[in-house]
Amino acid sequence: MATAQTSPMKATGNRSSNSMSPSAEQLKPADDFVDYLKTYAREKPDVAALWCFGIGFVLGWKLIPW
Image (cartoon, rainbow, N blue to C red; front, side, top):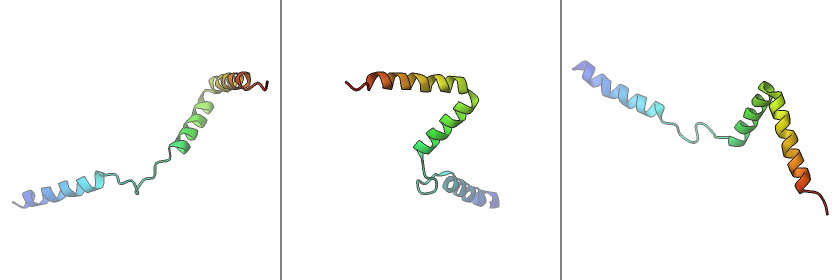
């Protein structure tokens, strides 16, 4: 009987510890995205440079002052 009484208490404790409250961990998607891009650029600098060149080329082409 003693084990039957402790198991519901453990289940209750696990349920409350596994739940994530929004105030406990603040989500920062912009900072996470920037960190991801920095990591990607360190791992593959040639691909990152080509993406920057391509985006700059398209923006420069579309934003030509008339």
